[in-house]
Image 1 (tube, helix red, strand yellow):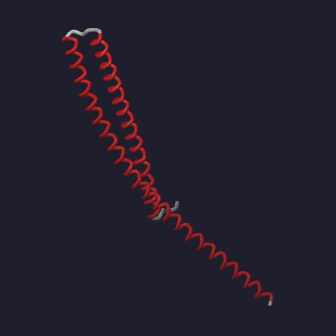
Image 2 (spheres, rainbow, N blue to C red; image 1 turned 60 degrees about the horizontal axis):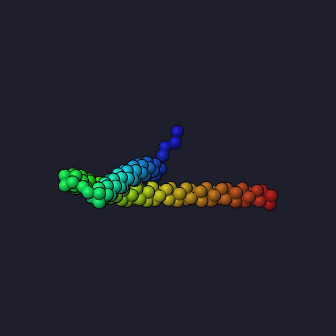
Length: 146
């Protein structure tokens, strides 16, 4: 069983952190999409209800009916404002999660670069050792012939 060096452990850790941050970002995006859909539904419903009010007013609407429509539209306006605030909050949350993911990803890529550099150094050292052994072997072979 081989033991991992510190850079491999840190690379694994940052990879897991980056994956977790990506998952949180995806969830935040889903929540933001749902908040936007709910806002759009409320706005469509409010427009439809306002259109009904206009239609009924053109046909003659009793004062009590107008008051009911007006009260309901006021309640819809409050709901739209609340949902708009929820959507704005979700946008801010998505942006925070995006920044967190980018930071995690940057760390992960940095450690991957360090790992790659260490592997390149080891490879160059191995090539150098092999070349040295080949040169020594050739030198010995030449020395024996002469």
